[in-house]
Image (cartoon, rainbow, N blue to C red; front, side, top):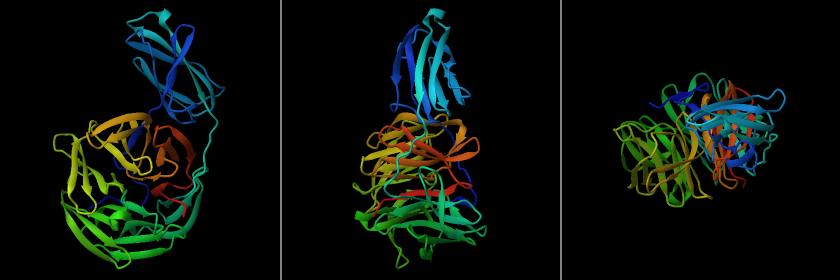
Length: 400
């Protein structure tokens, strides 16, 4: 049975984040190795990698920082991971401790900008943790919530990370456990009104997605035998499409759809400690891809249809934002999104195709933040504290 959410529960969620940094090429000189953007956002992780290290290991410290600055700095040989919560100018100092000399001291200059946020054209939607569970609109620049409807209480539960938005119908689809009976719900994304509610057979669905060019709403059954099913939400009917193989070893809520190629991507345990990236045709259930990932695991898998990018977030530590090559299984980390000091609820995230933004919750010292990341570069574009006790559903509905 799928894990259910009533409050905000985490699945294998402790995370790590990466960013970039600057450095000196030697005593008295300064150079930049890599930055994900012109300036960092408060709370963004940056990985400092010396361009010309002359030692195996360095002792990293902060030589210049704004007054009363809040930051963390973790040394890792010739590299360091830096995260500043306070805007301003910083200078990092690296002194050789092994295989070098004091004259090889290097510095790195970083600027952390004032917080900024670019409004989105569509609507960020969510469902709050209990109790009650409320369908809400989320302000991506303030973290404020506008409650539209109550959709659950302590008597029901929601399988974590299993939901989808139909942008044409402007509906959110998800499951609700009502006394051990799983119902498929359709919620009007503009009003919060419940417009679909019918009982699902068996163990319910392990995945829910929408592919408009392949018949619309579909799902994958939960349990040992996974089957692709076409769903007519208004009629309340389910049509079997085909067998997908064993459902064992598939992480919950970690899947994505490419509507142009009509592919459903998900992960499967290969039985040797490696995860496989699997793709099936959403029209026929035929398997079209099965490759071994170059990293052990992903806690998020998403697709940006306008940038034609498959991407995800790796497990800790650190948690890195990475793009995937479906043809080879190669995973290319771009930036750090978290470390052992923060946490991510697995499978609770969304994509804004037009603006190329990936939206995800991040627990920072007990405060939940809504993080926006550029899907093309991995740079953090905004971070705002979320109102309330967190979200168990987070997604995006494009503007009409």
